Length: 224
Length: 352
Image (cartoon, rainbow over all chains, first blue to last red; front, side):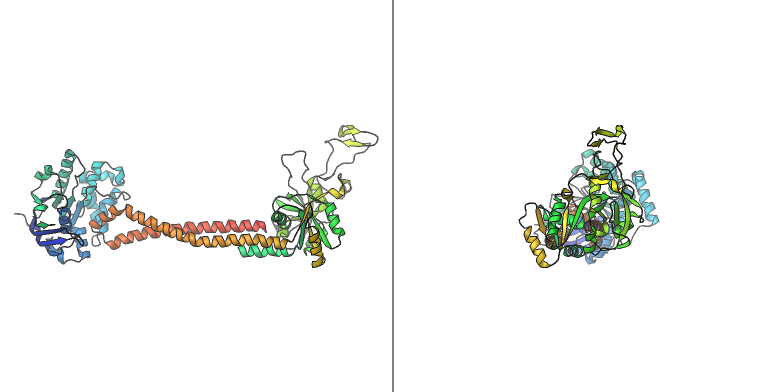
């Protein structure tokens, strides 16, 4: 049986000056598992992902992730937790076009105050780039890459710090079903290799059979 | 810079009590006659000088302008000019004889010539082959420094100026012994030479007597006449006399320069006030650029934040960018100001 990585208890969150609130009485996500967050638009999928990542702080309740209770951490500590333990894959990849592929890949190390860029980390990043098939593009700019290469760069950037959690926010939202499947398989392959827990927000039901667990956020105890 | 310019040209105006010239733009006439700049007319004549002199109300100094040597203005005048302006020859003499030239103090330095050397006047009209030839002027003196336009001028006698303009000339003598191939016509009363006759381009002791003027001496042209009246009363009478003259205007250069400076100072004030407006506009423009940049990079900033970048780091990135922008803007602005100051100063220097 897999060890639990994320445990949520009696979570209550609401945005300031908004009627929206998210309640999660209890939720457990196992280590190295693949979880899909589904639900109607506005049900709180992204909010839940942001709470797990430590971007948002709950009003009540506890979120235990990577052995830490995020509720008790300061903003700076949550930010460092995010930089070290969470990888993000965005719908539009959000690569920085004015940085070379190499620098985009090393960006998470630059952001983290604790990690920084060392030779070992560079070597690790380049070996990841090699395994994902973009090692010959390191000196190019993202705009010079094909769509597929950009996707792989975004995946590599999310995994370069060996995060325990990878949050993918609808990375296949704009793609056709065949390409979506290819991208998902690449994400799953790479996250499995790095033994990360994959939490993906998606509307695409055809992809759900790729996940061990599917959580309908709308079914969690939510009120408007 | 403007203050130095104002002091310099005001002094020049004060040292020139009255100025007589053809009717027209008073600013042009003043700038031409006091600073030797701009286009010159020759609508006055020696007859006008004679009339003014006969009034016996002061010293009247003729000026014939419009010529140059090595791009420096050549001023035709008489010895009174040097006396009335307290100009003396630091070395050599002032120009008294036909073909002689004395150099202003800065001219002497820039032309790098010695007394006894020759300088050639510039062709009056390069494309008119029938026009007068350049004339070799003999340098006879270097004038003392006056910190005025006189320092940048070459002075000759008024007669030399007429020779430069082509009104007077010298050539080999034409008489019964002159070869027929050099003659256009020959009668008992008159011999007319053709263009093959040799014209002198240098005036020296051996050919000076062969220089002559064909026109009526009273009609020989002048550019303007500077008047140094004996008294204030004489000056007022002279000025009043020419108040309604058909052809000649009498000016008090100090007043004309005062008007000119008034315009310059107003322009300076306008520029000064525009600095504030420009600075304000530049600040607003910079703010707009920063806000626009923030707006267009909103997603990038959000991405960095989601990935764990602190707000402080994001602010620092933007601050450094703005600093770089400001540093380059200031450098470009300083370069612009330096160039403007340098060129502006140069232009004002030319007007002195």
